[in-house]
Image (cartoon, rainbow, N blue to C red):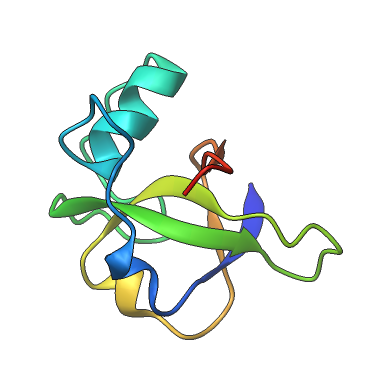
Length: 91
């Protein structure tokens, strides 16, 4: 598990060219398809590709991971089970 936190204000970023959504981008990069939220203890299936950062880390890069719409609004730090895929730097 990885401790993460949501990044505010990222809805302005469109998914990379050739992808219909950030969730599709994550799925194609990981070659996985998730059906439940990656937040520890949540089993919702209303998924989005959430922009997150690693919590308590010097790594300030942005990552995508599947979270439900509710967990994508969280303001606390929490654990995720799913992989973090780096957001392309050309955004």
